[in-house]
Length: 367
Image 1 (cartoon, rainbow, N blue to C red):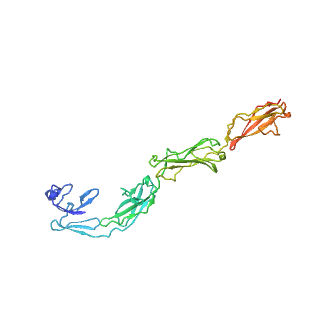
Image 2 (cartoon, rainbow, N blue to C red):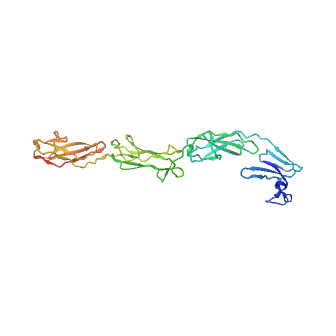
Image 3 (cartoon, rainbow, N blue to C red):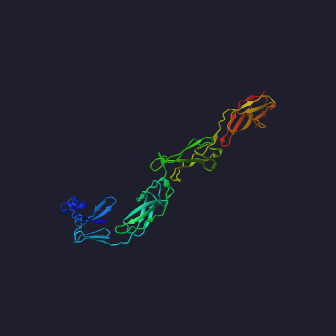
């Protein structure tokens, strides 16, 4: 604020103050010669304050005071003379500053100032104790690069006619990572494939995006599959259930999206599969009996192609009756009691976690 004298000459020439001594109204009022009170404003620049008489200048005996009453300007009877009286008021005291809520990346944080007597506030946001350039509003939105850092705000109080309060810095608060969202309406991973020992199960994850619906840079997915109560069933995106998974359930325990500046606690969990069923052996070739069908010779069961890890059990029959003695091996010695009888063999394939398969050979008549 400052006091000036306008007389319509010099720098005031050709202004409203020079028109008939201000007797001609302009801009809605008459501007008389005399002392004026002006103010500098960051938004409006310099402008003339309203004074008594609404004529733009103080006349003899007229008084102007600021809103706080700390400054009084009185025009004296003598021409061009004013008396300025300043009443000192105590400066604003210190107060408190805080941040509303938990600062989160991409979420607006608000500054709270509580300073007795203050009618306005000035703010300065800090990251890890250092001022953030051009961050002087009452609100602030942290960026991904600020995740994990400490955010604080400095608050200074102002009031007309009083010196500003001491600047108060709020307690630092850790900036939480940005929140994840699922794009496309899918909210949990899924599993494709039949839950059976030996089958491949494939887990499909989500399309993770930020609050603006965009995929952040450097995003990675950790999609893990595991079986309930079965350590040997752990795996990644694709999983081949092991024999130990039978009668248990498999599900992706968690899909965890990872990107710089984003929350590391976000995850999605799928529904579990149905119970893991026994596997099915692919052996379909019937066994064959090799060797000469004569007394004293040996017959041998040939199983043909087989699955890896399959073991076999053998049962030999004569005229469809089980041969009990020494007839459970791959080979059979032909005895005289078997003459003119039809010999067959049943072979059972066994594998842990799989359903057994039993196949019967064609008969061979003993000569």
